Image (cartoon, rainbow, N blue to C red; front, side):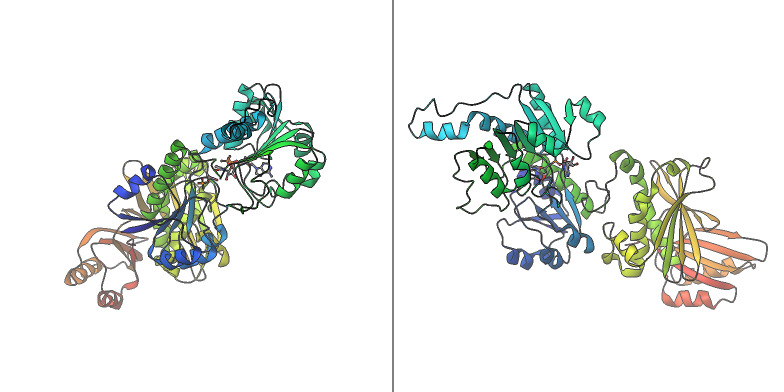
Length: 531
Ligand SMILES: NC(=O)C1=CN([C@@H]2O[C@H](COP(=O)(O)OP(=O)(O)OC[C@H]3O[C@@H](n4cnc5c(N)ncnc54)[C@H](O)[C@@H]3O)[C@@H](O)[C@H]2O)C=CC1
Ligand SMILES: O=C(O)C(=O)COP(=O)(O)O
């Protein structure tokens, strides 16, 4: 049973699939302090949050069972990602579900700013009919500067164009060609602050974006500018913004997010006649909350069930087409790594992925977290390694990683050969994936096999002598071990030979000793594919 703690308000509709799952127990406990969370977190396998819960190092450290933190939304600045990675905890978010909703909020803020709607409402509702105080401006023919042209920024730009606005923007990662297609003129921050009529920010809060708009930018800003922040508090310097309002540089500002949330009651934005505020409502629509809750619940359940998942924030980003093509190989690579680790002696020094066939055309380095999870779990314990911390653990141990195409890459069907070099030896196994059939081992070293990576496999190296196969069979039978399949190979008559037996249960210690006591047998290894 997986225990999931939901510590922020998340849509029940989205959580339904978790509540319906037979292997999941969902507990909702919102508004807890860090101490309260630390006290209860050891019982949970997953934590689901929005932006309120601060997922600190102390909380992650206390989460001894924690496998995943799911963020029902985009920003993960409330989660200590470094701590999560070093504890092997996967962090997933739901980046697409609230894009349009947040864009619409930013747009609503821009329109409210242009026409003083909140101020006019407050006065009218207070009984005053004042038509002179609220002369607004049109959006048409105005220039909108968008800082951060990702999912939300681009949606804002599209809507601005429909309102007859000219859109200029800055985003170091948006290609000129794409911007041109969207009708956005890419430029720099300086030009934007000097020429736009409205500026809206849509970046994450990073070291680079913190105070992206501060005194130096306000000092050169076009007079009458209106500024909107529906991204993150801290991107705009709040003190410098107030100063710019006082100096008459700004005509108004609309903020959904604050450097400190909730802002203290005495925060100067809260009663300022030219500042519109909302309490971090960017993502708060029925639709967005359902979307993000559905997305994140799906991810979390996949992770708990050890199924493939997307959107891990603390793992390298894999383009979805590549992810879909490589995904069938993930489990097989883990099993290949696991089998090799059990076959080899010595400390792991090098791991190489050799690929053949169509697979060789893809970036197979993406398979390393899975390969390393298999290899390192054998040495460090299954609970200690996962696909999030596997690369980190390999680096700490100075294990060299490389990928190459196999000699037959142009002709053979897709195959992956995993080569493991330790301080004492080098061994390799090859696996293949057939759609609809699944992954299997097709070679152990040079010996062809046909094995599903499950249950137990005995690999016996012996001298090729008549009668040895029969004696091994009798010995195993005497220990109550059924042989499901047996494959044998040899390099020459009377030379080195190998027996690969798929067996139905684990070989007892005394049977292993009896096998090794046979004079012809040089080495026996049992591979367990079980968890
Ligand atoms: N108010 C709210 O409730 C919500 C706020 N957000 C926030 O909105 C922001 C944007 O979200 P998305 O568009 O989904 O993210 P995104 O990742 O799609 O876009 C962010 C963009 O910012 C750009 N960027 C990064 N550093 C930059 C820099 N120094 N200068 C200019 N651009 C830079 C990136 O290249 C990227 O294109 C995030 O901070 C997110 O947390 C998102 C949803 C709801
Ligand atoms: O998705 C985001 O980044 C947001 O800021 C939304 O935050 P929330 O889930 O509404 O607390």
